Length: 157
Image (cartoon, rainbow, N blue to C red; front, side, top):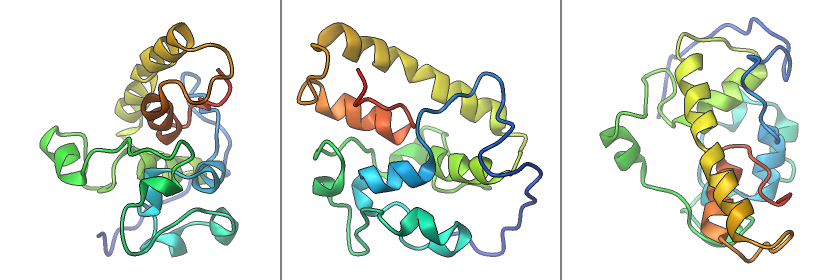
């Protein structure tokens, strides 16, 4: 999907995040929980630490919602992300690719936009908290899965 792209890591992995960006899960944790139907990172694993993929739930052939933590499809096709203007050239897979690179230490002019997009997901946290009894993981499963995609630990509320 992306060839010849090079970036510089200016921070230590997992450190010195923007003050307004407080993800609850690391990329490694997200991959192990099951996100994006297991298909998302299957062709770019070499870019990231091997240990991220040791317990990752991946499917090289297709998007498989059964691999998602909540067992549901909570994704839109990449073509829809492009149509809505959410994709930038440096991160052609979108927010999660941006987050993986940000986590590794890349800082980019697009960081503020991506952090604002992450912050906008907080409304879904409020909806799940309002609409579901504490610990009821079978409540709002699609919304909870979408929150996992954005590094919000929706198992906790």
